[in-house]
Length: 97
Image (tube, rainbow, N blue to C red; front, side, top):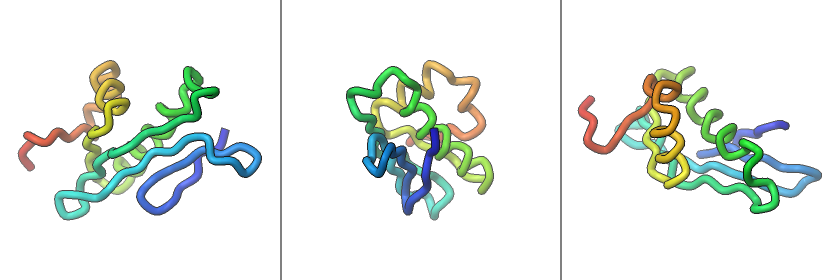
């Protein structure tokens, strides 16, 4: 599976058809990537594609010394369920810098 980068997000496609995407926007002076939307085609759900998309944003944040704020519902659940895997990049609205 290949996750591709685009401006403000990552996406997954098969045979030229976009089947999943995660969208973020830079906040806090560009130091926080706010995950605003995660989508995967219903036929592909349960295959960890959404998690791989979120992980791509987290890897980007790590490489650039940034944080990730999980605003979309999927990312919120993922960050809570696997807290230790995301604690190094997690940023919440009430966090102080």
